[in-house]
Image (cartoon, rainbow, N blue to C red; front, side, top):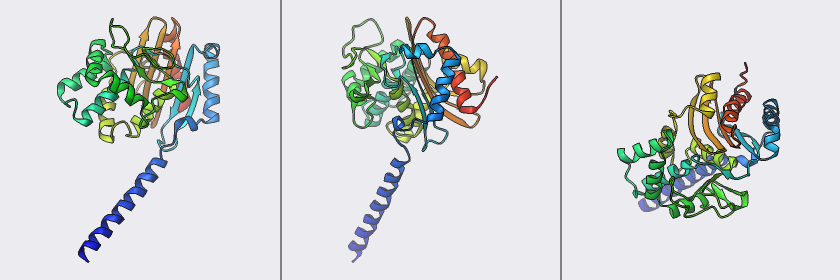
Length: 293
């Protein structure tokens, strides 16, 4: 009888927790299915007011805006959401994910050296730190992780996504992306998904997501999104990674300001791309927070 009681108690515990997990998963929908027509219209009008709508039409500009103030009910707007572009240092966020997956497995130690290297890679965009961590994570491990059913951050059915197939240095690319032959690439949709998974504690684990978020905070380079917000909308908390190479400019962030929380991602191809992004982020912030000046 005692064994039967223990068995039934264990069964009830399993059922209760299974239903909790099922309900929890329903709280976080796929953001590509959450496009809000009003937000979409505001984004398009904002680009037109900045006279950047023609650049978007030429696919020289891609933007994702996701209001996650209510994380269970994200509101999404996309411009060229699945267009993959060279993204320079922005995909270092993929190396960050790979490192924390390896930390969780015990393959990389969670020591001060590791955290310092990851912090330099993200906040200062150190290419040396990125190459060190990529080699520790393993390029094959990372490419498999990005394409895994768990994350699908690179999805051939969605025209690609986050990709790292080359060290950040002079060595040639070892593993270019399957669809576009890029060494470091991204789509704004998949980068936005990355930040949404981070915000909802689904990158590696809730605890590791928090550690990753800390590293993405306190940006050390004050340009693009950071420049625009610091100059025009001060007081924002920014968790961010950007990238620059020749005419390619990118930025991505989870931003918290005045009780609002939103994800902004932009990829641009233009010598003026950095200046575009500083203006774009102010427009995106105004859309979410209702601010204007």
